[in-house]
Length: 181
Figure (cartoon, rainbow, N blue to C red):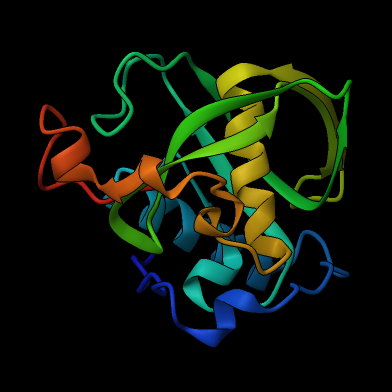
């Protein structure tokens, strides 16, 4: 459909709490999802949330094939998913620190704590339920994207700013032309 502009940190629209999707299997929702997929692919993103393209709805997309993203080499596959109105439930208190980037915070990376294992629920664009229990990279990606629906960007979760900086300095081996997310 269309590659949309990705809002950058500092834009107040990224700090809003997104509204629930109330109408499913509509042309408007399907167009939004198609635009989000096109935008995520064009930016080599691991995920994208509707607020990142200025749409105030609880819609996130994520997923990748194993070792397919030049910005996250060596990462395992995550099934391509479109998730509306997500709810995350941590399964245990264990957290894991990991490096994250974001298409809305281009050129930067930081270490962010995330729950190691979660259950996420919601619905797809047709209103069909999604209920998954995941861990590791999959859990991290989902938590990152759902944070966007809550008006949170990953730097707000960084605990040690000695582990936050420019991707090209921290990881010179990564593709310097790739944006982050």
